[in-house]
Image 1 (tube, each protein chain N blue to C red):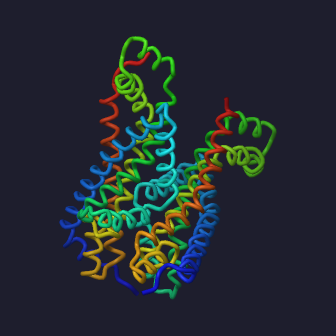
Image 2: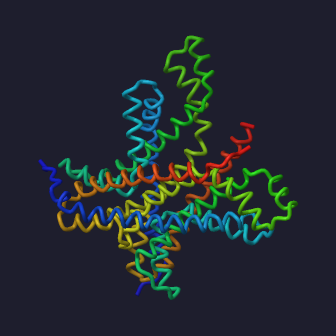
Image 3: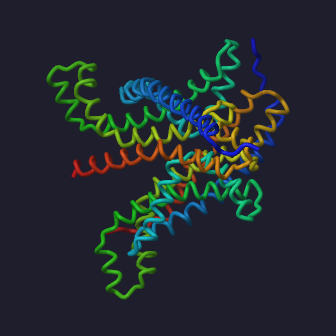
Length: 216
Length: 221
């Protein structure tokens, strides 16, 4: 019977590659859509506000696993030949867009109103006002929470294992079934996740303290 | 073109409702355990000794930086290895409690540190024991301050409990998986239970709101 050796570790690393790729794609995709969601949510335009508020509430009020299932099987119904990989990325992108949208909504609203009013008084249009005045300040406010969410996202990609996508957690399951040493394998898998997430968490904590100190 | 057909889901709806009740049971047991771990852990973090502080810190970081799925798998295999034989549902409760507990420790700690040290000193100088000072002067106001953060963490725990289906614990998602494998109506089944989860989290939100207004309705200076 094989034991845990370099081959098994290599297989886990292959899984880690997909975990990281899925995390990055959904963070970037979710970031772009999330920015649109945040802007729509803070636009002051009734219908836009309502729709994005509902969008955020649905993603925050349902399990990530269900979002994954519904989008995964929903895409399958569309009758276009797609890779499972596309469906999974789509699900995580939608998930990230709602959470990042809400984090950034809060950050935009936390920028003092006087900034917007001053920009308006100086004749800045909406685009310039947002891009040059509000968003840079909002970005700084939102950084700790944004980094915190990226940790949630990396951990959340493990659920793709349940629909059979071979990322780190699924790779761990496969090896565990082969060598019958679940404690060892899941221990190592956990440590790999920890090695990815902990530095991010520490960075987020440090920024939060810096921000709190700056606000004092 | 695929025709959506919710009739099978409607037919099995009572089963799904029982599953939803099971999810509430699973989650509330997990929440009680998480709260216990949170309080004990937060108290340990206030300790004068280094070791308990260090142990709690390591526990919190380890849990917060690894996926729940990996935690529940690990526990699922670790418990029998340690000679503890539990049902998947009991294992799931422990996993949820441990996971939610780590987050609760951090939240409660934040609340405790927000309490003015002078309050503790005043309590001690009035002759209260350290335990009584912790219970009456630190914990209760701290709980009130962190109640919103703590309860949204508990709603998150309820949603996370869907992952417990992966070790075949009995709850809403595992019931849905059974209905799905009987009917092959994956989208319809999961769409429906997603709506049920949404209703559950709104129900909990309303409930926590009512409880919070009652429990913390005491005057503050």
